[in-house]
Length: 450
Image 1 (cartoon, helix red, strand yellow):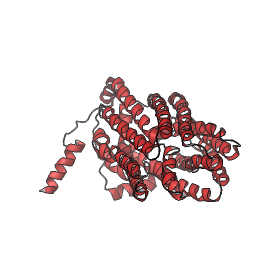
Image 2 (cartoon, rainbow, N blue to C red):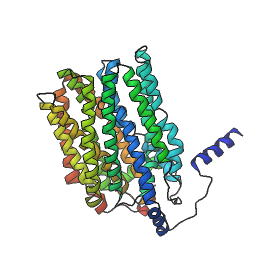
Image 3 (cartoon, rainbow, N blue to C red):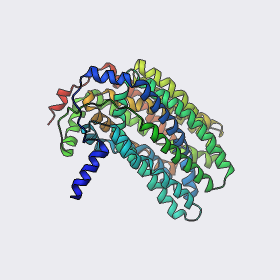
Image 4 (cartoon, rainbow, N blue to C red):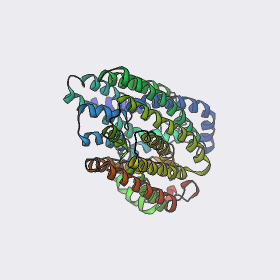
């Protein structure tokens, strides 16, 4: 009996108890067009508020400063980047099969997302409140909350990306995501300015209690806008596979789809290229003893670079595809680490963060959207999950390698980061074909995989 109630509750939560009649492509496209402006508006607002909140927990500036107040361990400081870069990507392959079978993606994103992604921010608030009296307790509590929100967001990410693909046609996704990130980066810049003032006006740990509380409240408000999305419903027409069968077919997909395989290698290199990102702030503090308030300015400059890149890359990607944007992001990242390596004065670090902001915008706008274009629509969650989990593995390895290099020399760290970004640029430009203009495997070619 309890299992029956649990099944009913899960069905109601995910809305699998409501059948969906088969629909033609024209009917689905008509509904997409009919709700386009509404979905554009509510998701634009969601992104603006979400990125405002996220600016208060910047993994490049704010969080390394918070953790450095509690410990001097470079490994723990590097763990921030491990969680930031890996937790969102890593779980996606393991939830893609479940996501692919669900006819409605919005209930996963909204109904499960509030518990998996939004609630954990409040643990970080509690951690900051305990930082003054119980730093030994505050540190693991902070990492627990930060990892929870990252892994939870990663679990629902295939459904969220598929939801966006259903709401926006391929030739408008770039401008939607670019404009969303453009406005979001603008609100994040305002958030960075506010965090700078809070760090200067309030002592530790009260400053971080306020910073984390604002982040948690903004993320909760953004969920309200997300819940207003109108999803064009589509019946599921892929055969049911067990998790074992699903995972067993992934190596064959990678082996057969040559362009996708090459993209995975290039994109993983791009992820590894960020191995020094989490240590730029710490390096500046070590070399020039900069004040806490300057870290907030770094965040603002980072957001300015990201704001400019978001709008530009969104428009560029709609016309020429996302690969070019990723190449430009790799180039910006390589120049950023070169500047960090040779910087003779702290003022140069502003340019470093501006370039890293440009790289981040490329990874956010095109790094997410490009995954939707390698496969037929029915298998998008599979390709998205596979790509992002591969990137997640690289993103976990990168900060650990970065932490090890940081214990020896920041020069070595920034030099290796530069070299890997150059390798990623070469691989993307000369090895990977733009998926929008290249042949993709058809559903029939994917379904005969044993």
